[in-house]
Image 1: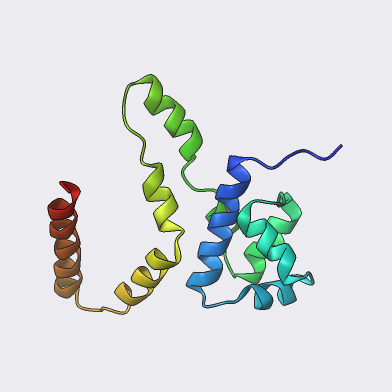
Image 2 (image 1 turned 60 degrees about the horizontal axis):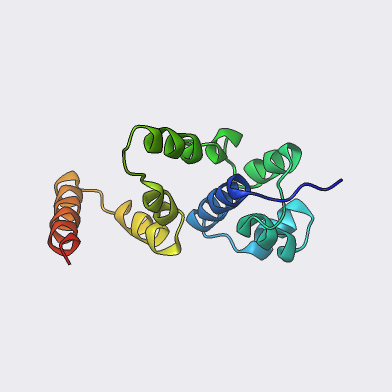
Length: 135
């Protein structure tokens, strides 16, 4: 019996995608390293197919990462706890972190070597967020 994929499968897929993109690797490149089709990588990244523990280890090796890189903060457990306590959820942050836009931002930000310039960029983002959060 095949089990349906769920929200956690989507989250793992997003993390795979984020790590792949942060290394400038295409789906085809990752698929070739794994000996599978790029369509299968696509299904993993979209959460359409579950990623077995063995396959996740292969993906981690192909991306030269520890497997724990795919197991971050458990947003679903935290979200349920936040609801019980009446707090708001930060799931939108989790979704943004795995977006192409965020990955590009981090890639370029990491090339800035001067900490004072990095601080200015962070300050600019904070100011823009404050200004536009009232809209």
